[in-house]
Image (tube, rainbow, N blue to C red; front, side):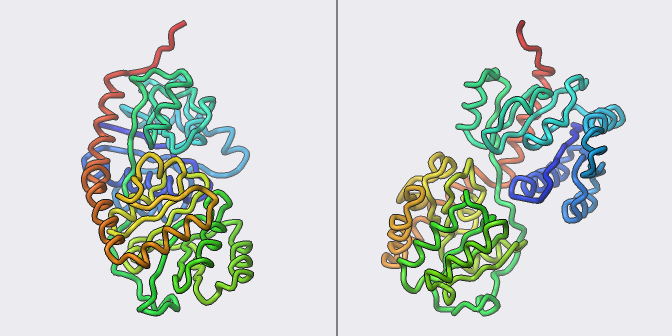
Length: 349
């Protein structure tokens, strides 16, 4: 099987990280690939190590004008069986008249207008898949393709390196510093849970505002702003609780990462958690924008010694049954083969 991947994110976020992980895993399964992507150094290094050829897309106005021609020219030379466009911006680069089927990846509830060059649609959750069908796409051409945790092996981080006592109970948030991620809700909840420490791993436009909020709440001695980190597994292994306090989260790969690491998960009732986390079984779930309810769930984990291990064990079992790297890549390859069989999409008149 020969696949061209188009990845056009201006920065590297969770979806882009998963795309790199999936592509390198596909290479291990013998899929021949070519990646069209932005010139970000870290992904390019990983592609080179996996012996995957790349074509880079620049950021200039001329690059934007030529993007569809670049995809078309690469396809003519590479002769792929499929073109896989990761997310809406990349899908908008795909020309309509490719000789092979093109796939559009939905990591969110994107507008279909960006996917006019696509013949099949991969959605990261069942609810996103259902929304694509409701908007007129044929059920047979819509697939649910989960992600897996993006965590290379690494030892736990030393708490002392993060100015955190070894005996403290530590909650970890792996998130961009963006309003939709609910970091303010987490900080307000923390103020209601004495003794709990918080690591915030991520960066973004709201970081300064959250640092100011932590100061106003008197939390400077218990909050650590860690910035962007590449050692997610090390942080998860060193923490006691993983928290996903988002206002908006279509899926949330952090759910899978917490389960994979064997850490109890506390989440808000955004779309991802609603579909995957069972309250009091595979995690604890509270309403969005409710710091008091979030604090109550965190306090339960501190007060009930058996609760955390029980939640973590159930989450790990769910991960092993449904979300391991091998399971997800096998499903992705199966979906690729089905799209090959379906061929190009010919809408009815």
